[in-house]
Every structure is written in structure tokens, then in C-alpha cells.
Length: 403
Ligand code: ADP
Ligand code: MG
Image (tube, rainbow, N blue to C red; front, top):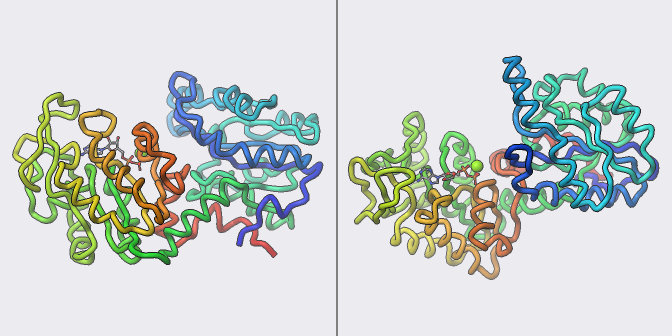
């Protein structure tokens, strides 16, 4: 069991919290505040305990190889855009420092009163962040007494802010702990890792097979059924010799898909019909007669027979892990498959259901099913890797255990 913030004496301590404020931005406006919202209980608790709270997070990508691109990325992914949203959700003022570490940050921390909060610049402004540079970790850990990990969405990365800093504090005999968001995520995802209840049904979809390969392997050992929809299905169908027309296929993954199909003969469930069109933004579309997709057509959603088939496979599930939409749900014409999977999961009364994917979570929200899931993870990549690695992630492993 990991040490949590409840186990700490926080009054008057300088507490660095790694949050996940990596939110979608458009022209400097936060498009989805969910991750910020989910971090609020931890921040409020630390404030009420009288800690001096320093919040840090990455935000988007910063290319440090190309100087022009670096400047443009920094402009686009400035943490100052998060500040007003954070202040509103928290209902208090937050001191903002446009540096990640250094004298400005230390001065601001010295001026912070007990129970006060400050936010520092996007950790990726620092070149050393993604490389887990020990010098950067040292700078970030300066004057810090306690490190709190509450960024589940970044826990699969061993970066300076998620790994280097807690490692350093552990070595210095200081305390490291997880926050409430982390605690909830670990508890929920652990159920998908331990796989103690059956049937355990995984639903995978979305666009990229290569991102999700390893989790399929992990799930073959844990789950009873793996339902595959979305663009992912076409690589598997092609590997089986089915006609997929012009649908999205990752040819480099065909061999892997064949191996999975062999190993998971009785487990992997693939679509038996599709909704197809001539183009991605196609206005005209139609169902296919069977699993084959005629030449020139693109598969953009699972078909009506597949929806029924998938619903049957989900009917008695006790654990459901869902990652990846069943179709191009952004277009209402191709959202029916995703909606039907949501519907099947919503119907399950005794099941524990988890969404582990950003687009899947937005789809569930848009289609009105979000509240019907037991847990909606704030981390897509992290939840996949946690299942792959049997419950272990660098950003979790480095935190101290309860005594
Ligand atoms: P998540 O964020 O939940 O992990 P992904 O990012 O892997 O999901 O995939 C989401 C994307 O997959 C969506 O933008 C959706 O439009 C796309 N997608 C789903 N089905 C298809 C398809 N048949 N062809 C092309 N793209 C698809
Ligand atoms: Mg996605």
C-alpha cells in the first residue's frame, strides 16, 4: 500500500504536488477542465492542513531540438492558460510563477503563507524534464519537504517531475505520498489488473494498434473476452484474410495481429459487419452485408449486427475495461457503435466498469453515459500501461509504501 496524504503531517511544510494539468487547449483556452477538477480534492486537503502547496505539471509537448519550434510550442503550451480555470475551480487565488524552478520559484514559496497555493510553469519548458535529468530534479526539489504524486495520466513516464524528484526526496529521508486522485485511480485499475471476477470483458477500439499492442497481450492472460472494434479491428480482420477495402490498417502489425488471433482463438471478438463510406467525412454511408468491406470503401463504424453481437458478449460481464471508440464517433453518423457499447455497459448492474482512454471518455460524456461507468480514468496511456505491467508504473513505484 502506498503512503497517502492522509498519513502525513503537513502543517507548515513545503509540498510539491505533481498534478496532471495536461488539458486540451485551443488558442489559449482550456477545452476540457476534467483533469483540473479531479485534482481539486487533493489541493483543498493540503491547503486545509496548512501546507504551502506548489503545483507542477507538464502541458502539451515542447520540442527542444528545433529552436523555432521550441519557442512556438512554449507560447502555445504556457501554464498561464490553466491558471484562471484552476482559480475558479478551487475558489481561491493562486500565485503563478512563469518558471519551473530557480530563484523566482523559491522567492514565491518563501512568501507563501500556510495554506497558500502556487502554480509553476509547464515542466516541459525544461529540457531535462523528459530525460529525467538529475540536475533539474535537484533544482525542483530545492526547499521542498514533501512530494505528492497526483498525476495518474503521467505516472507511466519516468520524468524529472514524476520520478527524479521523488527519488531524490526518498534518498534524502523526506516523505513522498500519493494524493486522492492517484488513490482512486490505483484502486480502480487494480481491479482490472487483478482480474478476480469473471467474466472479464475488455473492449478495445480507436485508431492505433501500435499504441495498444502490449495491452492486448496482457489482456489475453487476464480477460475472458477481448472485443475489438474501431479502426483497430481492420488490422485484425486483414490478418484473418477478410477484405477491408480502404479502411485504416497498420500493415507492420499484421504479423502481431495473427499471433494474437492464434493465441486468443476463443477470446478475440471481431466485427461481423460495418458501416462504410467512400470518405472519412462521408455523408453517404451504408452497412455491409458481412464482415467483408468492398473495394474503395472505408469502415467507419461497427454495423448493426455487430452491435448486437458485442452486446451479447458484454451481457454478463463482471469487469469491463474499455479503451477506444468503436467508430469515428465525432461524426454522429458513425457514433452508433460506440453508443451501443456504452448502452451495454450501462445496463450491467453488478459489473465494475472502467474507461481508460481520453477519446473514449469524451465519447461517453458526449453520448450521455459517463456517469454510468464505475470509474473514468484521467489517464489513457497510463491505464493501458498499468494493465500491461501488472499494476506497476514508475510514478507509482517510486512513492513510499505505508509503514
Ligand atoms: P482513446 O483516446 O480512447 O484511447 P484513441 O485515441 O485510440 O482512443 O482513438 C480515438 C480515435 O479513433 C477517434 O478520433 C476516432 O475517430 C478514431 N476511430 C475510431 N474508429 C475509426 C475508424 N473505423 N477509422 C478511423 N478512425 C477511427
Ligand atoms: Mg486518444
